[in-house]
Image 1 (cartoon, one colour):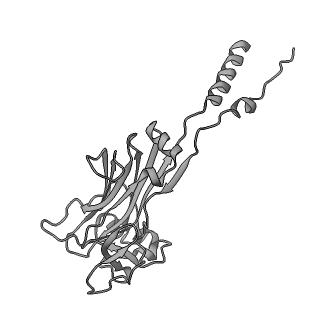
Image 2: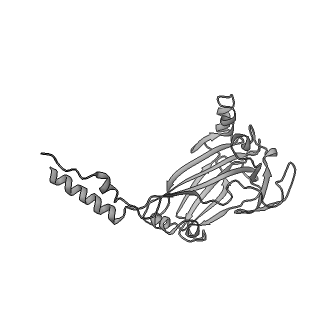
Image 3: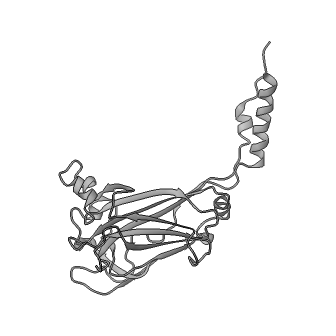
Length: 253
């Protein structure tokens, strides 16, 4: 006796989702690209005002004070602009305006994840070490107590995924040094869950592990990312379809 098979594709085709998968860097001007004046060169002083970060020390990587390859030599970034930590800029992102309503609903249901990344280096030989910090808040303006805090620390190798030297000189004699010496450019990245009640996030720069006691914030950071992805809930149609499939399989037994 031949059995009439109902195509699984017909049933699983009902597995529609509410909203859509989202993945994008919500940080404005993640590479500190210059849009006001010119980057500061060797011996230069003063600040620059740039989109997303406000007033900060914007340095040209042609004089970066770091050891080894300059960052733009190791990446596709053609701009020589980078943040120099003589000031402490921060950026607050209102998730209610940077994400869709569907994405916010998915986060509220516990279905939001993020990838947080940054390139960092210290000034050669002065013991000043940078860390990039991400905090989520339940307010839309980054105020109140932080829901969660995540830190990428150039003073340790935890969450380190690459260095500029390993990209430019793969297998070279300085590859290991570039991992552990905070004066070399290194890339850090981590992923985790977005707090369900998060309405905003703030990125700022703080002293890393081993930072020289009483030292100035003499460090560098570039290419900051906070890439948020949400996974939508199955729709009611999907549940009906899967329920029907379960019933058919049960009858066949």
